Image (cartoon, rainbow, N blue to C red):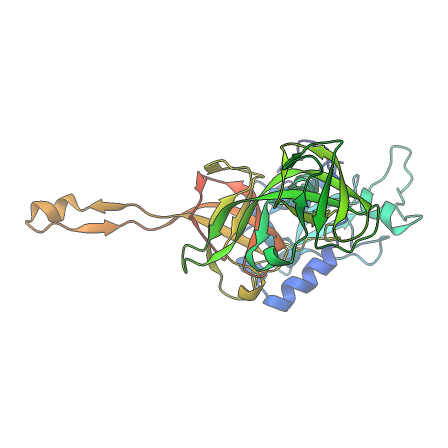
Length: 359
């Protein structure tokens, strides 16, 4: 066995409550510990570093990181046992033949136990290890990429420009549909292509093309919106979305409680191929049982090939090859009929229309 270190990444740190994860997983169905695949090259012990994520640490000990809660052993004798901090020591042991992950609080070079009890709760969460790279998730959520079809008619919109039909940073536009007070900040988006469910051919929503950001400078109907920054011209008919700057305090990686089968219908980056830490849009959401933290596996559809042997026997035959696993993703934002998911692992190319299922 060996001591391992993960590459350091700069992250916005959000706390991970291991015991809470365990409670959620237990609620949706327990897994026999003897069936949990342990990484055969797991370290005897691992010292947590700043920049680590719980997902990556889990992968050191387990073949499937989302099984972490099943083998986590909370130690009631250490301070704040539910949170994992830089300097903590994790080790894999076996109790009654079952794998168990144990936590030992880190010790500073002076030999004094490092106490991370917070002055306020926010400071503690900022020091704790996050489940996934939350800076990436925050970046996706800060620029609306999806607008639900049933929300379009409710959104405020640009009705006019004082001097024409377009506006840019430093100018004002007139908007209708909002009663928010002066000082309220909105993202401006232009409706892009429709997002169509390939299974039902229903329009689920639209791509939201980011236009810029504005602040209400005068309330009323219409209200005046001062454009603070723009990446493209703001036009009549562009929509206003309130700026979202919140994330769940924790993501609890776990398999869905029921069977999920959906498809990738869009890639937020606009690329045709999807890799690690890219966000995708799925045609499944809350009404289908998806929740933040659910883990799904992407599958590339098997090709249809001609059976050459059967052909030589005077009867041509086409064969559908089986789907192949292409990667693992974690759902981080759920709408009614759609959701965002972050690709955590990609073993092969992932594409739009690939199938996603329970892991």
